[in-house]
Length: 100
Image (cartoon, rainbow, N blue to C red; front, side, top):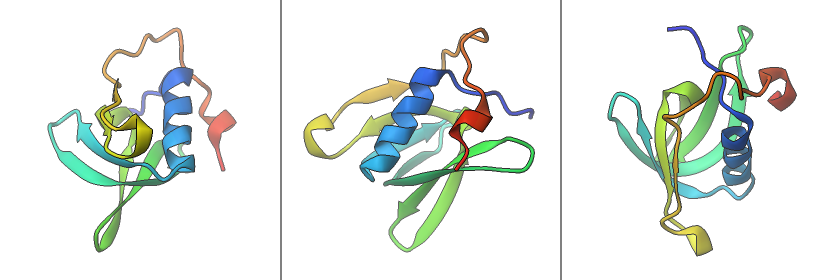
């Protein structure tokens, strides 16, 4: 499946949760639920972007366009929910702008 870039609002949300190492529950578009701490994002050579997560005992990566919903589970943001399913094609960020 070809990578589909996120809109800028969703990129900003991802960057913020990584900056604070937020504890979250993530649901993928295929229904997998993951509880983990957000660490950072990674970009592959072919411009696919991933969210790196730390769960007890291991680190995993989820491709950003495979995320359906993120719910924050810690701090003052507890319960904040961000849906990733509606992404207008005309409002995408250029992946290079978010490379590390």
